[in-house]
Image (tube, rainbow, N blue to C red; front, side, top):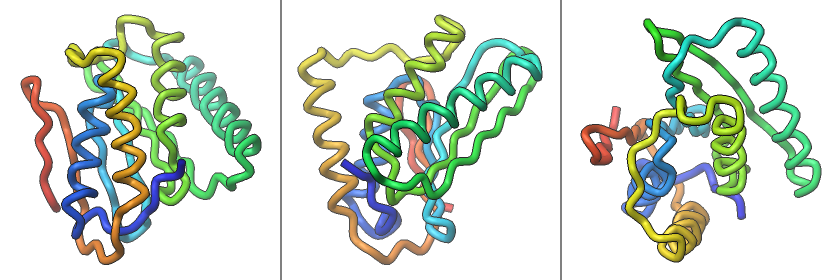
Length: 170
């Protein structure tokens, strides 16, 4: 259940998968694929300023759980970059992972960690999907990520705007 790293810019299925991830996980405010580094960056919004000690603790916890997960799945963790940017009373948390090994389960773990720590301060669009639809959506996301073709030549970004997912190529 790994998300392959190639083909995001040339595959209709890859484009659909970016949209599906942002739609399925209402806590993901944006998702960006960088073909040069073959990485995916997920952005989450927390409606509060994170003190440096809180960010340090969260950074450590995310690294710890993802390294443990990768150890259990026997798949190396190639790229993991974490960043937090605070603007006024909002913090944007970015998690960058190598697209080759990022999995749907990891996205779910990240969201659960954020919800456990920040509860309702994690920004999320309302999700109208039923539980059954969400499970089907996860399977479709994984299948789409596994079926991507090589040859991307530009970054794709999917983000939320007024209840819609907007995708553009940079």
